[in-house]
Amino acid sequence: WNPAAHRGAMSVSVSTLLPTRTARKRSEVVSQSAFAFLFSEMIQYSQTRVNTADELIAKLEDAGVGVGRRALELACWRERSSKRETRVRGILQFITQALWKSLFGAHADSLQKVQDSDDEFMIVEKEPLVNAFISSAPVNCAAFVAGVVRGVLEAAQFPAEVSAHDNEEGATVLLIKFAPEVLEREKRQA
Image (cartoon, rainbow, N blue to C red; front, side):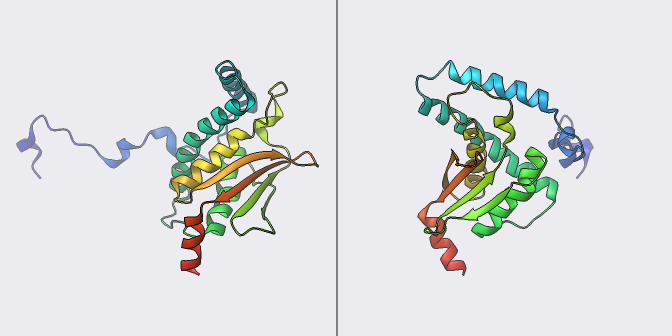
């Protein structure tokens, strides 16, 4: 390739396509006060644009889906893993360990399979960061985290419904119900 022959043509290297801040050190974190402020503002903004609690939950989940899609891409890039998860257990472990740590600074408290169902799993978080500083929301603000998990799963080709619930111990449970095609693919791979 002769650059003189292509006057006016622009050459772009791969390193200029990725933002330089994407490659930041893992030790850099956003302060909890900044996160709490932005998250509470997002909730207040969403509350003014809905009429029911169900609409607020849907709005928080939708906001989380976009974050989840981008978080999966960033986490895979940071892990420098060329391996794509193709099994349900593998993607759930990736979410509760690597992704959870990059988003919230620690692994999820537990990952459990629902005993009576092959297509349902639970991520249990005793004290979710998103609920730590929100006291006046009419819903469980972990609906945002449910949206993040749904976005990650959809981006990884594991369509699922994800919802946030409170349990009797005061922990938040993210209930994940996979689509039938995910279970069919899982059976073919076994």
